[in-house]
Length: 549
Image 1 (tube, rainbow, N blue to C red):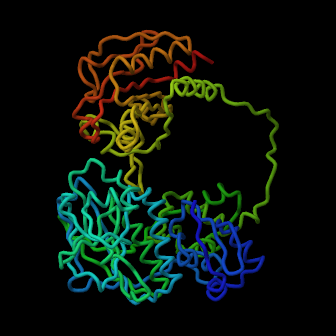
Image 2: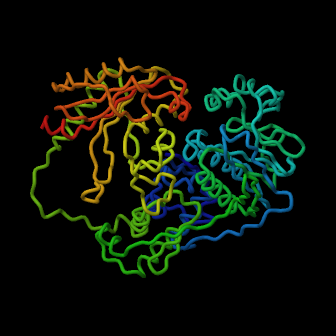
Image 3: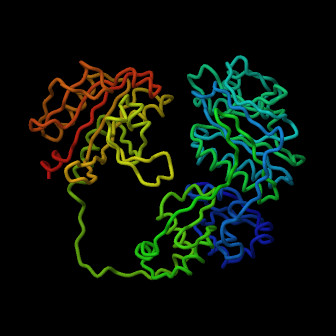
């Protein structure tokens, strides 16, 4: 959750009187008021609405909710001017491969607007950007730089510029060692032989993402009228959403948006602000909400949440990162309808509730492993082919996947195992303290070829880094002793290719194979950019649970 602060004077001039009735509407909109002072008030913005992490973004959404400016707001996009080009060098491919950029002109900055720009930048860093790991944002006065700009990687000793809020030139390594931001975010560049930088046509270093801007080219003041914005990171779609949020917020401050040409292996132009469309079922809306809304009513409610609607199709703004499924649209309908207008009903049933026995047993499993200082993790049920197949050294031809229809993200298949997700967890925490010992209990999915339908099973997977066969076997033996069940091992005849041959075993329960245990092959560790050895096991636990009930 994030907090934004709004001057009462601006709110009353642009939205309405800040009285008790208005305060109640703000709370019902899903942005509860945190504090109120004589001149300003603070709102809590939940993580699902990063588009409202500035006063400008909140104002746009709230005016629609009040019925004052309904429907999907359109912004004018000016095409790139002659030299508006950013060249993405191949040297950043393995370090920070993507960037999206824009230019905004006609801005009128005062102290509040500068503060708003800085705050939205930092709040997006913390939320959408995962503390700059996923996304880093740079903002520069346009008059201080010259196009074309190059995004490239350089050796740390060759990077030399005066970082923001300092007076002397430092090298890339010195910035990580001496600058406050460098110290805080140094782990994001740990182990990199080269660091990413933006350099303009005058050979000036604009910034070293995700750490710091240059003092010469990266400081916005009240004199700044035009700015250049870049967002860099690892997920191109997430970067585009982030840029859309920033430029449309600036457009609310009277800014004019200009596109920028991006020179990858193929040409891209950003931002594009292309809306998405999603079908919605009137029957589903009324079934989930327990209402009897007509299509005309749904249209009005959706327009109050900043959408357009026609003939069962909702048009969604390019800055709404939270709309992934029909249910998200239905939630917007509920907000516009007003939760205070729902009539609670007591179900016409009589029953005594109790916790499911299977849940109790799985909790006991967790307690056993937590008791030896292992950390429980929870991953999404959705994954992608790159993580489940490519990075695991498997062949797409031989591996069946269950694909999600019309997925709005890169996560487009149901997970078939937990091992690749534990490796993903390890790879995202290479800068954390070792040893790392983690486990997960959860469902995986498979396609039953005979019944021709999707089925699921409960699985327990655990991994240690650094680890070996002996240590992970000890953990598995300890686990089964604590649940008073016996297992046996035998040499695996046909092992999964991501294990090391000779350091892998089949796990048997009641003479039936329930999983594998072993050490991960070095080539797979390399795919995940892991330098520490890892050992893992994964077992099916449905039958074990049934024996314990």
